[in-house]
Length: 433
Image 1 (cartoon, rainbow, N blue to C red):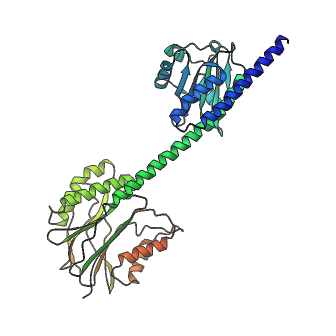
Image 2: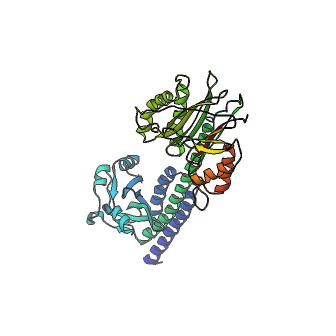
Image 3: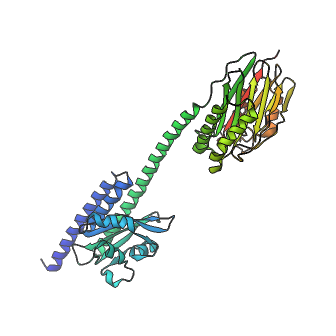
C-alpha cells in the first residue's frame, strides 16, 4: 500500500472515530437538563471530537451585546484558566477572533495565531496558556446567535484541518439544540416553581378574608373579593369591636400581583392594630396613613380606602374616605350615591387629613361598598361594565342584598373574558320593618 493510500485510510479511520464520538456526544447532551451541568460537558466533548489541547465556550448576552466566557477546559493549566476566564474576561462583538466569528456568523480556522491581527493575546498573557492555532465556530439556532465555541492547539496534526472544522460545526449544531432545550426546561421549571409559589400566596391571602360578624338586631353583612390573578391588591375586613360596632372597610392597593398583595397584608395588619385605639374613623385613617406612608411612597404605591363604623342596633354609620369610590345607598325607593369628602389615598402625604361623615341606615336600607374593579370590568368585546350598567342593575333589581346579585350579574356579563382588575363588593343592610 502506498503512503498516500495509507494516509487516506488513517484519515478515514480517524474521521470515523470522531463521527462516533459526535454521535455519543449527542446522546450525552440529551440527558443533561441543567445549563450549569451542560456547559462544562459541551466543552469537554468539543475538545474530544477535535483532539484539541483546550476549548472554551462563550455565550452571547444580547442585552449587553457581548460574549461572556461560560466554560473552558485545557489539559495544561486545568481549572485555573477556567476560573480566570469566567471572572475576568468578556469580548465585545468584533473583538478578537471569537468576537469576529460572532459578528459575522462564520467559522474561522487560524493555522498560526501570531500571523492574525485579530488574535486577542491578553488571554494568553493572563492565563499562561500558549495558543498556537485555533478553530472557532458560531453556535446558532435558527440564525439566532447563542455564542461561539473555539478549540485551541490541535494535538493530532500541526494545525486544524477542514475535517476538524466540519466536525466542530456539526458539534455546534448539536450544542445549540442542547442549549435551547436546557433553557426551555429551566424556564418551565422556574414557571412551575412560580406557579406553586403563587398558589401558596393565594392560599395565604385567603386567610386575610374575615368571617363576617353574625347578624344582630336585624342587621346583616356580606362581602366577597375576586382577585384578577391568583393574588391581588383589593382588601376588605369586618371587625366586631368591644362596644358592639362593626368596623368595616374596602380598600384597593395600586398595582396587582405579589407586590400589591404584600402591601395589602401590611395595611390589613396596621388597621387591625389601630382599630381599638381610635374612637373616630377619621382619626383611625389618619393614624393608619401616617404609619403606612413611608412603606407605600418608597415603592410608589398608594391605597384608596372607604372605612366605616356601623352600629347594628341603631343603623348608625360613621364613614371616612381615603380617595375611594363613594358607596351606594339602596332601598325599595331606589338608589343614591352617598356624598362624602373624598380625601387623599393612603400613602400620598403623611399629614393628609380625613373627615368623618355620619348617617343612619333605616330598616330596609342597604349600603354597598365596592372597588373600581366593578365598573372597570370588561367583556369579550372589551366593553366596560361602567357606571351606567351598575346603576341600571340597581334600578331594576329587588333586594337586599344587592351585592351578591351584582357580582353574579357581572360575571355572567363578562363571560369568559379575563379579569383586568381585582373586584371587591361589601354590603351592610337592615331588614325591612
